[in-house]
Image: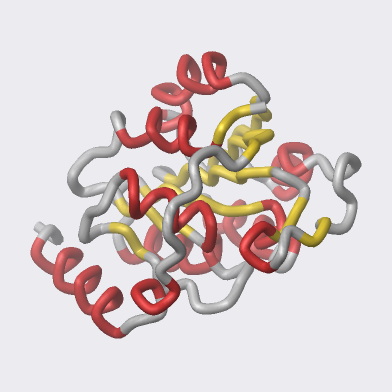
Length: 191
């Protein structure tokens, strides 16, 4: 199993200034603590919408790398997005799914199908260009540069444990200020 914060720290070292990171719930809170930046899109609103919002950003900014920090519970709520993403085929799209088998921010209730669902197989069946699973940090770190460089959409499923507890700032992620900061940064860096 991989500590989520260690996996995010590995990603942090490879993020370019113009990359767009779309994060949901606990992955979002961890990411904001580890890599605060204006091009972190945190306004997903409802659980399950990270992949759909990321696709919209990828369509609007096709030259940018878009990285989705999704949870297994969130993705279960919007599996149809896999087919839509694969159909659109955004070239610079890395979909990271942090699989821990629980709805972590909602009381750690178990997700349906824990231990039986194969998200990487679902992504391939939907038409993703590549999908792999990782349960060891070193293997993920070694593969990450190639995953970011691959023609998308690409999925990496990480079997994770929580790691350090970072603050859950719901007020910020649902705020107008978060949306405005992102919008302004996107417009500033659009050229």
